[in-house]
Image (cartoon, rainbow, N blue to C red; front, side):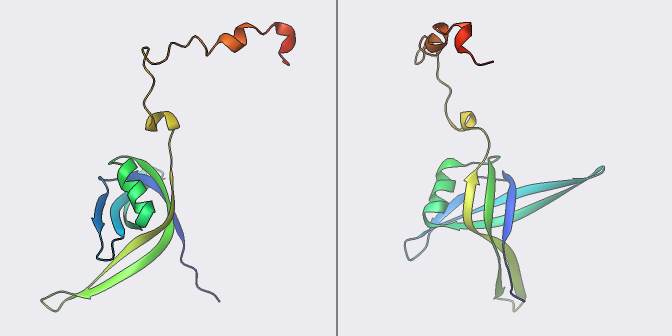
Amino acid sequence: MSDYNRLILVGRLTGDPERRIASSGTSVVTFTVATNRKSGTNEEVCFAPVTAFGKQGDLIADRLAKGSPILVEGRLRTDQWTTPQGEKRSRLHVICESFSFIGTREAAEPVPTAASHTGKDAGAKFDSLDDDGIPF
């Protein structure tokens, strides 16, 4: 049997992404994705810590904020360490391998104002059509 470590999360950011630069110069962006699952009257919420590197991390940090919807595809990773008091600790988190912005494009881009778009050209091509040119 071959091992397989892959997951897909669809949820919302619980806070603004945090960016830091590693000693190698690579961007390291961390954020948490909240997902929920409803079962009858119960709702289960899961908070998944995610780490994205390089250009992917930069895009996430530059374009997303608390509450933004996102789809993350990646793998699980366990970090283990010992505290100064000698206690062993571990943390499970997601390493982002790919992601997608989700939601409407209109929500991501500003809506044109009356001053910047008059709407004159928008309906012009339809005003010249007669009923014989419409296939339905």
